[in-house]
Amino acid sequence: MATIKGIAVAPGLASGIVHVVGARVDKAPHWTLRRSEIDSELERLERAISIVDERLERQRAFVERASGAQEAGIFAVHQMVLKDPSAKDSVVEAIRLERINAESAVQSLVARLRHTMGKLEGDSVRDYAADVSEPWRVVLDELLERDREQVVSTETEVILAAEELSPQVVTFMNPRRILAIVTTTGGRFSHGAVLARAFGIPCVVGLPNLLSRLEQGMNLLVDGDSGQIQLDPTDKDTEVFEVARERRQARRKALIRVAAKPARTKDGGVLGVHVNLESLRDLGTFDPDHCDGVGLLRTEFLYMERTQFPSEEEQFRLYRRVVDHFNGKPVVFRTLDLGGDKQLPYFKLPDEENPALGWRGLRITLEWQDLMRVQLRAILRAGASGPVRILLPMVTSVSEVTQVREVLEGTQAQLRSQGYDIPDRVDLGVMLEVPSSLMILRDLVKVADFVSVGTNDLVQYLLAVDRDNPFVAKLYEPCHPAIIRSLAYIGKICQEAGCPSTVCGDIAGEYVVALMLLGMGFDGVSVSPHFLAEVRLGVRSTTMDRVRSLVEDLQPLVSEKQILDVLEKLKTELHEELEKGLQ
Ligand code: PEP
Ligand code: MG
Image 1 (tube, helix red, strand yellow):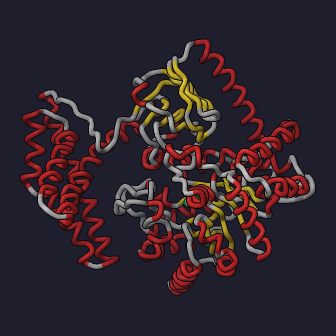
Image 2 (tube, helix red, strand yellow):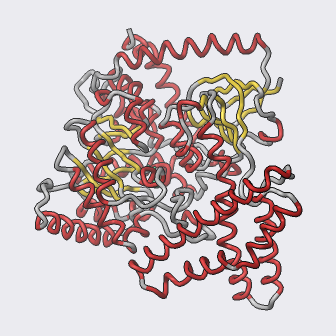
Image 3 (cartoon, helix red, strand yellow):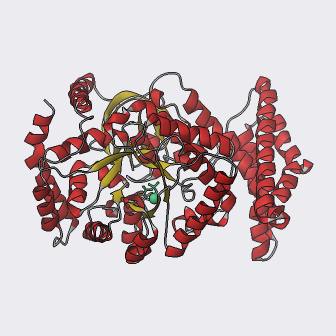
């Protein structure tokens, strides 16, 4: 039996057998085929090639429409590369004669293409080498998707173990069959972690050498609260663990029973407690009465769950389902926030040296306004069924907001002229995630109808700590004094300007942090479904005086340790009151 300590990213306890998802991309698995398997392996290869070819065709047509034939030329070149008979013949031959699996044969071809082209002189040739191998690299990815299918179709309940927790893996799996997730890399605020929390799946990441220590089918105990996992536990360990799990479940049930009561302090202060949604699958996991609406719908995950760009009609139907589900409570739709680890399976963004500082969020949709228009049309049309708001990710300047406002007004006018029933006005909000947005906050609140603080990104940009990088995970501290003071500043400026403000980053799910935000003047928080009940109960257990004095106590502190101690002390003080609220 061994215990490994990692980073706790999604709460909960789980015990079960582990299902290991294999290594990805550059380490394609290699195996020898039986003679009888050769034909089906060749079929797999053909299928992967034709999927990639169709995808390239769609991308070519899309880019041609958006930016012209010249820009789209690269996709046509990739299609030609894929159809080059000599390349394909070499793969087929390797499968037939060497009897190796398709992944391994394609990987050799990619290496060969890179090697031969790389030998020619000059950087541009090297770029070209990367280009000609690219479509085959995508075929390799496609073949490797097998891993994903295995996860999706796993029949028994398992604990999923993987090298990394990409949003794609989480998006495509069936959450009902996944008891917990454990991974070697990843951070507390990476998007895979956000999704695990949304689906209520206990999750621990940053577990060193995890995969080499596991065997398929091994028993595991996963503690998503403390970040500890136990490999091959004894019966006694499992017994003790099960008792703790049952106790935890009983508390959870008690919390759910009181979750419909709104978040009002004993002296009448109100905090809006909204929910963060990533998938329509989340809708069935909690009661809409347990929140005041949707504070953040990460629409990119709805795009990710598909095999091609959703049309306006499809988006409209999805969005209207959410609006109907919340029955009069507002739904905040964040426009498509792609980039970094959020990639669409059918549309590959360019590889970037530094994606967090690259082409992402609003930068993409402002450049490709067709994408934005279709989405705005769908949101506005869904607005006929209930209150909707629009939120912009990764805003860095006032002019970005005014540009979107223009597109929005044009879209509204167009829809009206086409006879659609849309709301008279729809609020346009700004996410505060980038330091520049704080420096120009007094100007932003003049052009925005509301703001929502995305602390997941704000922390990474203010502290210069990659939210996905386990090597710096210890430095990713949302309770750093710079973050606490920034939040206090935002709360104050928004209150002075009369601009509604919420925090939708995952920090707000910790109820004492939500209390702090209430004390800072925020109107609301938006949290994963799992945290709704405790945040509401926490607010009911205290007073405005108490949360304001908490903020005063925190302001002068100079270390995260001091801040965490003060928050922990408050938790201890409120414990009794909170438990009383559960009776
Ligand atoms: C954030 O950055 O805090 C946020 C809510 O957006 P995301 O986690 O999707 O980047
Ligand atoms: Mg963000």
